[in-house]
Image (cartoon, rainbow, N blue to C red):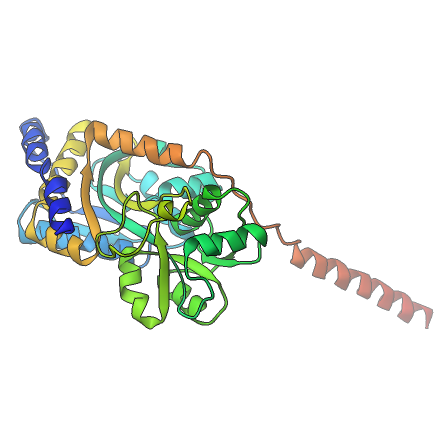
Length: 350
């Protein structure tokens, strides 16, 4: 019932958006798109972002929404920054575009990239994923407030598995901010499946999952303590929010579409219209429901506002980076050199 109401409320403005963007079609270049539209996904094939873009690829193809196909190009590595850099440097003719979630904000904020939203032309934001905080099924913590109290009294003792600099990491940073004095010890784990393995193996005390990931993994012997939404997740109505546990922390994941800087407004309008029409197809509606995603869409001024809000939300987040390791290769070289020197002296003396 709740999801039905949410879906109606979220999709209601789409008809108006479609009509508005159709007006732009008459002014578009007749030859656009003149070749396949390449969507750069800065993660490996089969991952969440890849699956998300393929949903749009399928919906656009099945409903004949574009004269050219969408072609997915996976450029994985360095937490999505290799792919985003490739998109940033691509030709601004409307054919190469990027689909990247909040990682475009967190990578810049963390220092993993010296580029961010301002270095692209925003196209649209489509879909919001909720986040849950989870522990192993036999964990001694039965509520988020209890766990956070422990992290407050014993800072840096609870190990949080995450991808450093990625949105999953920032979910934990928002948690820390939500209860001043709380400190986790972060460890690099990897994607959702790897975080699950680390949690089940007892190598970490807690981690964060998207709602879809948790739905997939929950029967493996883990339990969610809370979600980080403004309201309870429709898929898990009995799961309290962090705010209900007196932790002032909210976080979610929104999928954004970007074009290289300098892409013309008429091409951006065409792409906005394409994504807007795709959002009302039966394929998108069904898949968003399966993925437990809220079917939001932002374009135009709504999109600019959403981008500003996401960037603003990171301003109060303090990042404590791990102490850099000493240059081991130089240490080994120096030690070897010293040993060689004394060996030489010893042989010369003999």
